[in-house]
Length: 179
Image 1 (cartoon, one colour):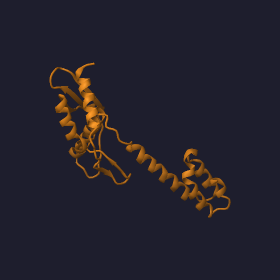
Image 2 (spheres, rainbow, N blue to C red):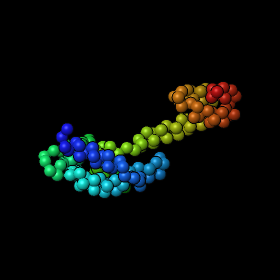
Image 3 (cartoon, rainbow, N blue to C red):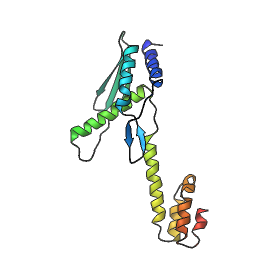
């Protein structure tokens, strides 16, 4: 095995042995996440100790983190497709900065195997749950309620059983659907 891979693995193990705290907070979806400042100082110190340096560059199509050995010519390249941002009330350069910051986070997290929950799943699940609840509440008659209830995946219907019983009080025999 090339020594750069051994050094990268040593850096990963050393980083996992440190206590990392998530300082970012998504108030809407109610989850914490890592910001660059939560782990980058530790990574830089560990990389320096094991003889590695990481350099990030941004191209039109790809963002790259190239990890170089201090001694030798070994390198590892981690890539991510470039994207864009359209933050409300921001200038183009601020949107560019947001993209670059996210890319830096994801490149370092990928290279060092930093694991955190899937924020997309968390927010997607919340939106779907809210949508299903609103759909049930918006039912105007028994037939519409039944169609709306049946549109909820069977694996998720138990989550809405109490709501269905509440709505059932408005329409005769609706509680049979939720049972």
